[in-house]
Image (cartoon, each protein chain N blue to C red):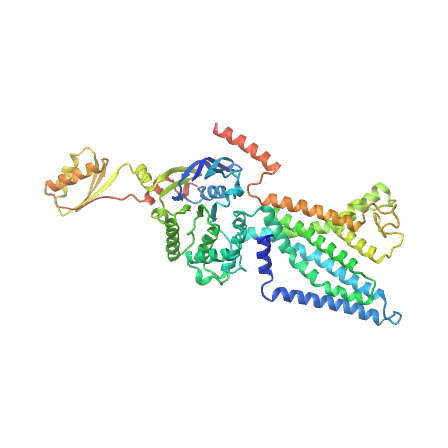
Length: 309
Length: 305
């Protein structure tokens, strides 16, 4: 659906985005992750026709985004990381204003406004002044605004930034809802756990370069070529360790009082072989499970951290 | 025909509550008091007759001048923050990422910002009808005056919008707008006078073309033309001649100063609106940016090698 090839953006001497490549398929929720100042917002603004690229290609459903910015604006809904609201408009008027921009008329516009307010759980605030809403509510309203014209692609830049935990959960619920509605979404964040359960694929960007991208599972596999298995035993830890060392795909063992952490290079079949050997030898295994590498670890591993910037 | 959404939204917001109605009421009250004061003082003049066109001309001139000064002072303040204010409030990107064309955003903001002034002007129309009681002023002349007001308001508004799009801060845009309005009103006169002094040693018997840009010259020439005071023509200062049309073809250039000013204003507004629209387009392809882009691309290629 969206394809970015060799995208570059330079501000004077500062290279904000370097040779960025990206593919997002229809219906995907793409998590765009990177530390602050990595180039996420710049890339998103270029996608939405709000910034000019220095070089590169972006196509959305076959349309050249960089040369047809007015055409693609009909297909994209954008929610910026920082935004203001018109303080003297009411919530429903705010959405109706954006509806009128997309030439949505009278009763249809009213219906869309009502539906969107329901989606973002702001129906009770429809007659409140936008300025009187809490930050979380404003974020949700802005999300509703980006959906007014039923865009094919939603580009959300840090949609949960600055929200309290409850508001974050509410925002996540709305995004899950959009996901179930089949929307294609690109969502950026500098916090990974926020996206881990939501996204079908992730791209990690650092210093303007896409370091790694693909499905969440693929990324885990690329970063963690070795699995770590945690075995919990009732006793006979040393005996189990001796047995484990006999296998070539066992790399390293860390022994605890009643646990062993195993660096493991084999596949699933090898893992079952090891478990079966332990059980056959009568070693009292309480649990045997590969540790999940989480996205947060991946992020820390592939980016160098903020202090270098 | 669809109304510009930006204009519609702004009008809705501006006309909400009692503030707008209150401002109009107060303005009309002040203007009425001014007109009544002039009529009263002229009436009590023991040498004045009871039905004298002089009364209406005095009141008309006072109202016309006050209203013109109002336009010159209020419009820059209202328009210079129109776009920069959106930028400062971080609402501009939200409009720019929609299908709305930059020219629609600029014209919507321009007409919304000048609408308040235009509303005051139109609201004062019945007040001007008071002068009909005494004769001397026709509907055609009032229409001419109001047309001149609206063109001037839109022109000053375009200057405000131009600086509002080109400068980041509203304060800077406001200062620049007042500066340019002051230049048009007074700077052009100074330039004209110096030009005539240096190149003609005061011996200049025509209307100096630079003064077509001057709103004060346009306004005063229109009023003078309406009153027909200056029979064969009159020189207010070097380069500024006003005369009844056709009375002294050799003195006047081919276009009346006020008409020339309106034409200048319309051209200036159009140019400034287009430049503003180009400026707020984030992916603009102006000639300068195209040149810069080419240079940038070459440099990027070199870097990649």
